[in-house]
Length: 377
Image (cartoon, rainbow, N blue to C red; front, side, top):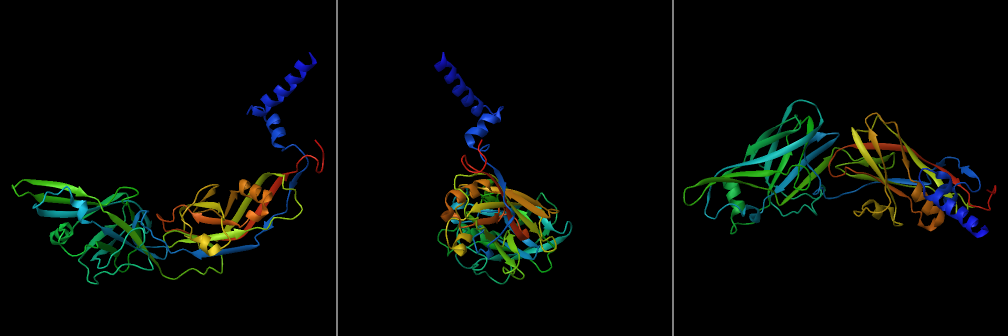
C-alpha cells in the first residue's frame, strides 16, 4: 500500500507538470518557483553600431520612382530562351510590357514619366548592386507615364525590332532594359517581380509563317532593383535600419558577473526609442538575431538567417519598440563566450524603402534562481 501511495504522488506531480491547465507542476519542473525571482536594473548597451550593406535586390519586388530620399530603378532581362513559345520564323506584330503594382510610397496622387534605356553590359540578379550597376545607353528608347494608383497595371509598348533582337540566337548579347524615373518624380511605385507578387509580363502578338495570328506572354529571366540615396546616413549617430538602401544595426550587452549559469530567465526585453523626426516608416517588422561571429562588419553582411528569431512591428506612430529576447539571454548565461551581441534588421529589406532611427537601447532581465540559492522552496 505504501509503495502504491508513493507512486501515486509521483504520477500526480508528473501529470500536473504536463497538464497545461495546471501550471503549478510545470513550474516546479522548470524550476521557476525555486529560489528568488530577481529583476536586474535596466542595462545600457556596452557597444552598438550601424552598417550600410551593399547587396543585390534581385529577390524582392521591383521599384521605380523617388521617395524617402531614395531613387529606385528596375532592371529587366528577357533572354532568348524565354521566347520558346513563339514559333520559329514567326513575325512579331506587337509587343507590350505589363507591370502590376501593389503599393505606392510618397505622394498619393500625380503622374511621373519613367525612361526606358537599353542596357549595354552583362548583369545578373544575384550579383548586381546599386553601387556597381551595369552600363546602359544614355539615350532613352522612350518614356512612359506612371500613375500613383495602386494596385493597378501599367502597360506600354516596346519596339518590335528590340524584342526581335532578344529572340535572335545569332544576335549579339542581350542585356535587357533599365526603367528609371524622370526628374521630379513625386512618389515611388512597387511592382511585382519574378519572385514575389505578380511577375512582369511581355505580351507578344505574332503571325506564323502560315499566316495565323496568335499571342503569348513571356516572363523575365532576370530582374533586379538599383537604389540610390541622396546622401548616406551618418552611422556614427543613431542606430539605423533601412530597406532598399540596406542598413542594419548590432548591439551588445555585457551580462553581470556572479550570476549562476543555472538560472531560469523569465523575461529579457530589449527596448529602443524611435527618433520620429528622422524616421520614414509606415510599417516595418524588426527582426532580432543572435550574432554568430566576432567580426561585426562581416556579421552585418550575412545572408543566412536561421535559428532563434525575435521580432516586433513598428508603425508610423510607434515611439518605443520592445522585443522579447529571453531565449538568447538564457543561452548567454549558460555560455557567456557565445554572447557576441544581437543583429537588428528589417524583414522588408528587399521590398520596401523605409528607414527607422533607433536610440537608447536597453535590456531588462528578470530571472529565477535555481534551488539551493537564496530562499529554499
